[in-house]
Image (cartoon, rainbow, N blue to C red; front, side):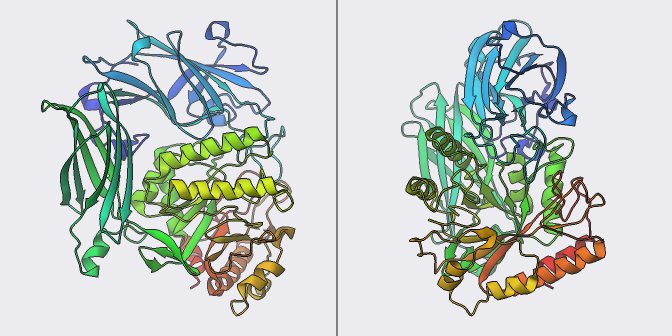
Length: 596
């Protein structure tokens, strides 16, 4: 890869596909494209020199996908990648980092034969400082990805453990499935950046960490602009390589002016941030671009709140698969289009289901105004190892995404997956409750749904899954004139108790129908399925209208999440096909979603 010229650098990194949009630098280079590749079915090779690279793969698409050029859907335990690149020139003290957005599941990375990184976890990023491994001439990077297809004790989401996708599970995703990229960083640089906000105090929270060479007298200059106006321009001294500050803004006072700065789906105002790191002798060490927002979410009584006002959630279940590219979006434009389509269908948010989505999706959700529930991909066995893996990787996901204003809820468990005996085994109940409390400990600014669907033991929102296809029965089942405790005790959608016995405290929190519908329409009914089926688009429109009319009018609900956004392989209950073609006119769905 030739060294880029200055004109090839990205003047606005976040807007030009930068893989980490809230901590962006101009000196970065994508390593996506053609790599050498080898399958290692039994994980027999232990070192790069043992590998026979016999084909090519297009990164970042998983080898199971057609877009990768490999398209192998059988079982294999490991696979290998190799490519060469030209390192950019480094000034004195500068470092070169190699980043991986996500690799499933265990990664081992060598550069020029030097081991530079090892990472476990299929949904979180990692990087390596490869400066000391560089040599003259072309550089060689080799990656080993180990991903046992039969391991049910690791977080795997909807990836099937059977040879062919069945029921609600889909093709596997092995190896690299998000962007690989190089980044040049100064000797002393900003390594971590997190934003928060407070409406009560009208302030922005900044937590910043510096890494690299230790220096005295470090300062960070923070400049915030919104709607073309500078709203803060401050400088802070670093203590121990850290800054933890609350940046007080001038309160506009009148609601009209306040609302111009508040982030919401209807007005997604972002605050652009420029951060400069300065040394004690007046030299600028680092410059990064970022963004944040003033946005507050929470619950009050039986309502969800956005910016201290009750806000009705109209979400759609979004599994984030594409036909040719699997879990990886075919392009940044495709991620943007998904956000636009969800809003065009009348939804104000998505529940990202069993997937930690690419940060570029979260960027477009921030930019265009779409709420996101973030959900941890499930493991399917309850063991000490699965507890350790899921807990660690959930913390990594939260750490990566906590600054995004679009994220308004955390969901560590779904439908008791990974805790199948939750009602009868105290240790499983303790794990769900402990992860609920851990999530609230790490982030007090968002509600946490402990176990989405049923068998709740600890939650801030009572999330119910009910695929009854009869709107009249939905209306009767959740009639708002009835006492909530009686509903929670009596109803058993999916044959499961909504609340585990002994955990009846969920009587004054918001209630949402977070999976329902699942109405399938597909020209090939013999190879597809849904929770119920229609034969024509006219029938699909009629049934969707009737169901959404009832759900919008059930006073018990603080919101809903319809299943689902797109068809996903054999599951044909999307409002769009898997190729993102609407099954009904967008305006028809928009009005029905809104209950109009």
